[in-house]
Length: 168
Image (cartoon, rainbow, N blue to C red; front, side, top):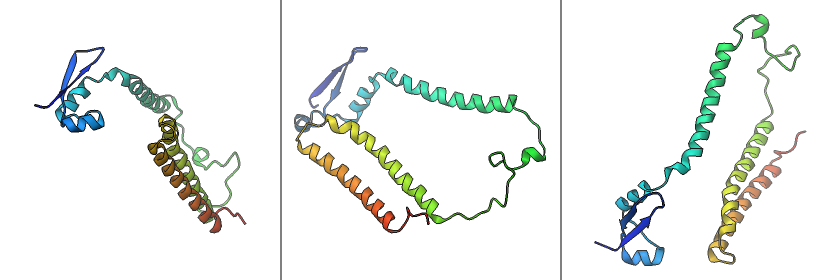
């Protein structure tokens, strides 16, 4: 039997877990055996996840209520005018099978690339201030984000040179 780690929770009893390797526990804090990890997970306060569960429940119920409500309360009349296409209050002219220039799709793809980039920047921006200033780890994080931004700028320049942003 190796050394033990005792965790005391304010809500519950003490939990004792066995450390995997005493040498590893000195260098990395502590390392638990798989069964000990499950014991510590079982003592985690799951009530902190209640707001997330409540928001998911509200979103699903809101969608279901709107769909069911429109089916029950909505009008059920059919007709030629109701089945006709609607284009901003004007009678439709021509066919809907019109071809679009490929540039419109390229612009949409470029927008998605930059939009996804912003989504990936948020976790980095919230984590980076918590890293010790002038540390080796901070330089690694900064180098990673500069590489990420550099690849995005290279993709933008490539699109610009290919004429993706020209509408003539």
